Image (cartoon, rainbow, N blue to C red; front, side):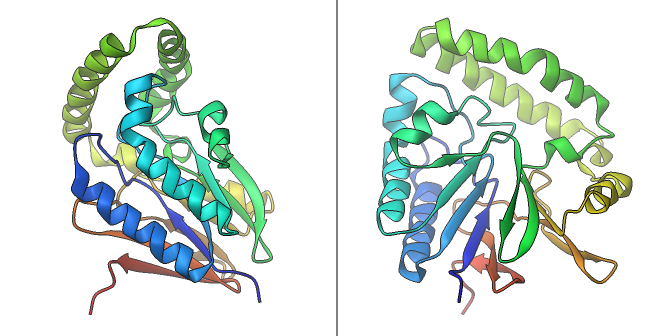
Length: 240
């Protein structure tokens, strides 16, 4: 029997909010007790920059993931639109597999596409252009700006970004049917993502799954459990 696989996204850990971090660390302990593998599909952190202060503030989370790996689990991470600056260099220090923005891999005898979700929102032309043109600039600035300036600018950017997102039309976070079906036509059995914050399990043609993971709060979260090819969205902590 294969070990269970767990999938999460959109935890949005903030450096100055301990409650949400504590919930996530409890979840990691649960995965450790189960002996399962963990796949983090982006936006684990509400903001990431590669400077000493950000790494120090988030070290307890990274060390907890490293401990999970040391117990025999696999931990894989792909970036979302919030933690886009987190890369292979930092993650490799903790033994975490880096998967960039998307990957296709065999899991429980299924060919699974893992991605945060923003790449699937193909109707959002504005964001797709922003990603292509602006993300490289962020990555360049991350290499040269002092940490204190970078973090101050990022705080203002995130506040503004949240205001813009709240004002956007809902269609920008929808996953077009044609985009999903194109993936299945290419030989994908299952798509797992986050990004929209609206959990969903949808079956296509009786054999393909499209799954959107739930977002987390400071009190609870949700995850996907895959066991022997069967999938189930669950709450954490579990409801009594």
